[in-house]
Image (cartoon, rainbow, N blue to C red; front, side):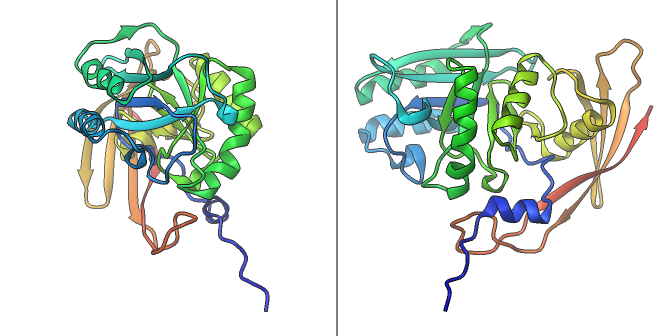
Length: 298
């Protein structure tokens, strides 16, 4: 008797045509810790760091709802000298700030807690993060590493592989931080195009999961406008109001283009049937899907 074929969550999601829009997890602060060795399935939580250091970093991150990601260069190559850490923050006015440091001993990571209370530096280029966390989900490695290789060849100073960013079934996933933009369903060629366009301040609806400073219905509304009117800058559309009704939201947005109308996007939501969402999932889960039904120019 032949064994059952192995389940790959990204393949299943593509067969189901799972919508990308509205799937970026909310968050405006990222903590990056360079760790070139093998990553535990649970990332930072699984590292054998001094308990006091781990507790300090985790508590500081939790206080500001920061996501902690382990990072490394493609191929697990180590940079010369100490390993690096960073705090990346997206500001409410659209600006972003970065603080970078180095560590050789566990206690050096205490600088992260200090950096979370400091303003940080403005003007640095964004960081390109590619989820390649194979021990967390097979698809993240199988689909993420070719994307990481292609992007690293093009932008070696900007690109890092990282641990789990959420949405394994949308692998390969790329996060631009601290811009707070998630892209999914990428391969090597589409990833290069998406990042190239992003760095030129042109966000396309294709492969866009959402902006992390917005909630899922708002992310879906922005993606609908990009799909209807074409690519636009990261901050071209601004959400001005979101109203909830029985099974969805009315999201109102404005554009920066002179004399551009305001838009009202009707976003409906529904819960999917329970299904396996990750390669290693032991139980079936349902998700809430958001879809834009109409766009009205005010």
